[in-house]
Length: 287
Image 1 (cartoon, rainbow, N blue to C red):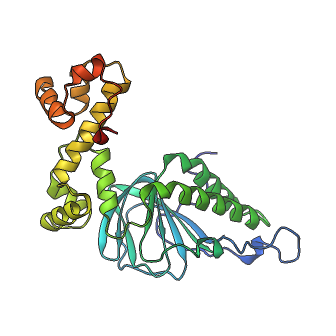
Image 2: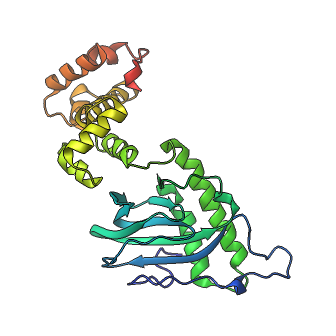
Image 3: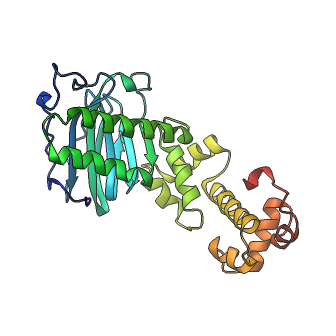
């Protein structure tokens, strides 16, 4: 079934799921106490929400397409397609479309499954492989067949388990947005985007971003990006049969000789030496 099945809103309109989707008398059809969706909503189109809001329940926010600009407790951060956020009860937040617009799916949930999680942050995961699970959730909701509630419970629990399993790689709760900034610099390491633009992405001034990033990582943003770039180049040289010139290009360097000098300064030997026989050497910074 295609992504666009169901009633996709052109304006936000939360609809609470009726208790009639479950049965208190039929075995196996009761509403789950572990995790149950309170509402499921999908939205696309222009929207500038007037004010940030808080919920008394947990909420998943999945960016289906485009980019959402999320503001959580006054801190702004970009959410690209494929990103999912889990917001605890009471977190002040607002979502706005990015430059290319946004399509977002919200799911408010309740139940004991999330009770042990911290409530002073927002957990974020980028996982494009979860899209089929979000598709199934939306398709099930769009049908709203009689007694489909237990199926919705099961799908919600699957998404929550997948989300929480994957999010451990993100070192859990990112209160100030700096973990996301680290990940962004690693993923965009070949880009020459100005630090001022990166700081603005995460709702900070250049000086504040520079100070807090260095305090967290021990490196300036540019030095962190350079290290990520060299690590990527090292992996390409170590595991692929590619000429140094091509690796230099993929690492963002037009001049292979300059790339080789930076590589030697970082790892203590040249790219050619690594390719010729130093593959077993793995400096701590190379992996």
